[in-house]
Length: 228
Ligand SMILES: *Cc1c(COP(=O)(O)O)cnc(C)c1O
Image (cartoon, rainbow, N blue to C red; front, side, top):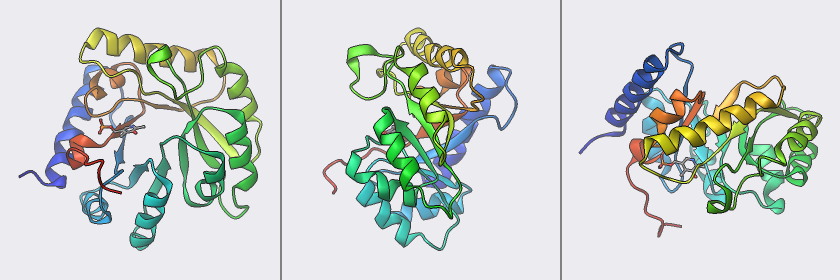
């Protein structure tokens, strides 16, 4: 059986190869380990093997792991859908939020970000797959949302996040990720993060400019959604 450390080296090699193939600078793509449904021990192993950034989708589950892993200097990213009543805990306990798709949520995160913490890093989730996905702002709504979020005092808008419709067709993957990159470029804001690419499509995402790939299955194995 492969260990998490083995999986990390395999994924790191894939990222490295894709970065070189795209003529991009080495280390220009960050590996965000998506640890939803996985026990704290798995994150501890991943940290021992060199990872520091972890993405979680479910608030209560994430807060539990943060307590268990409080002895480690981890960077926490919230990447799941956000309900209004969860914004305070997210603002208090995370370093990044990748899944902001409406202004009301951003305003609450800004108001609730504790004064003794640095501004909360934000990516706007954009929906480039139309009706195939319910989450994410529409490309039409993106410019106004990005400008409004940039003006919020306790947030730092870093870039865009997308989860295109899953497909094994490389041309379709490339088209979706290129659309995200073009949207980012069209904003004319000083953004440095494109959060896109998962276990099955990280090569395409990196070819289209991803700076952060969010990888779960390829690091930790398949998820069992029956777990709480
Ligand atoms: C679960 C999840 C991932 C990881 O997906 P894998 O296919 O397991 O790599 C990435 N991003 C988001 C937003 C997720 O919810």
